[in-house]
Amino acid sequence: MTTAGTRSGGPVRRGAARRDELFDALVELLLAEGFAGFTLDDVAARLRCSKRTLYGLAGSKEQLVTAAVVRFFRSATTRVEAAVATRTDPADRLAAYLRAVSAELAPASARFFEDLASFRPAAEIYERNTRAAARRVREIIAEGVESGAFRDVHVGFAAEVIASTMEAIQQRRVAATTGLADAEAYEQLATLLVRGLRSE
Figure 1 (spheres, rainbow, N blue to C red):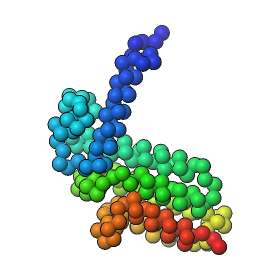
Figure 2 (figure 1 turned 30 degrees about the vertical axis):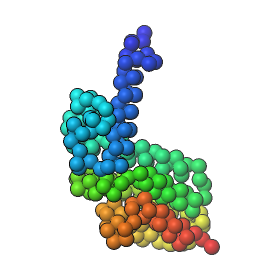
Figure 3 (figure 1 turned 60 degrees about the vertical axis):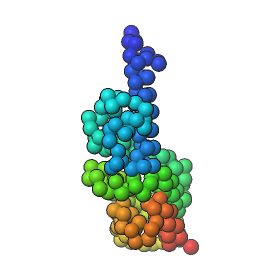
Figure 4 (figure 1 turned 135 degrees about the vertical axis):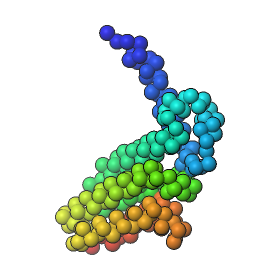
């Protein structure tokens, strides 16, 4: 027997859909404008909902921001992996991976990244995702070296260089020294790696 809450179009499903809609709108708002200057009242007004509704998503502004950042990176990871899944050539896979990362970061404003860096829980989420991305890049490089598609480079060393660069992007050092946004930096990294690693 199916209850009203589990039937198609029932209140549980509508509630989940509304929750997803609010989180998507919240992520879009934070990416565009950052979050340090917002109060819960501000967020409720911008999302056209009540503070009570926001408290249904998270117990505080800090928890709400953290949940939104988790959602952003989780969704981005899914789309990045989907971009790689259709490629077989290691060079294409590497370029697709890094350019997909670039595309996912492109909507994020400088203000968002500044706020991210200054709010430790959110910064740690970005750090974890950067480390995971570095491991993924290492896997793709190892595949390329093993198949002969890439030069016979020391995979561990190459991975360390790449991880250091990705960490510098994440920690805003690249933005500070070059003026490049994070998305632009990943695009440059993709170009350098594919050209440098491809076996001639």
